[in-house]
Length: 231
Image (cartoon, rainbow, N blue to C red; front, side):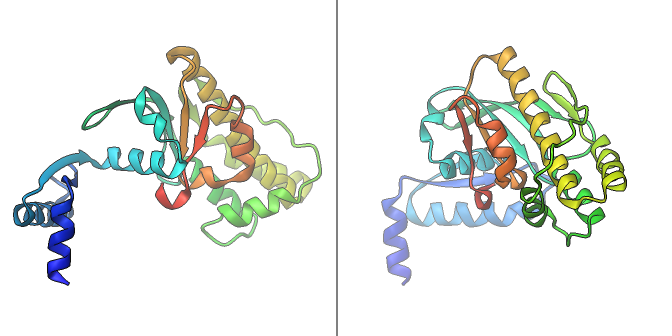
């Protein structure tokens, strides 16, 4: 087994090492392992940031490796992040700039708060989506808060609570939540394209597995979605 491992390692041209800032000491184990494997197999160690790792995984899982040939916009939308990046591919990774973000609540947090209010078990995304897909009523259009590439999502919780209090309709309230987030992300995307050009957009993160939001964002044929497991 060890000889097969060594043979496999020698056939590789490099070992990619995910690194991060020095204070994150738990990454040192990976650094030590990669450098040891490289030393033993005569291969090259290349460092790349944690963020670059997420971007590459999203590109890979989207099935659109052509994104690596030119600039694109990358969104990561989850319970821990709601952020838009301008990504410029280069030979050894990416140049990345933050060009949009939430100024308060993350999209995944808003989904979970609404879901808990409606009696859904945390984490709430998939069950809340099933609930929303049952809605057959017109969805009220809550006023979104977007300026340039930045957004505010903290108001969504109160709007959803008020709607449910007024209607006692869980499916309508769930649909309202996803419509609000979808329109927010769509407006952010439109604003960023107006500023940076009609670039391809890659969406990743747990929230982007939602079929309702994906349908709202897929408007020009240049929108791509990462698989949630690679987000």
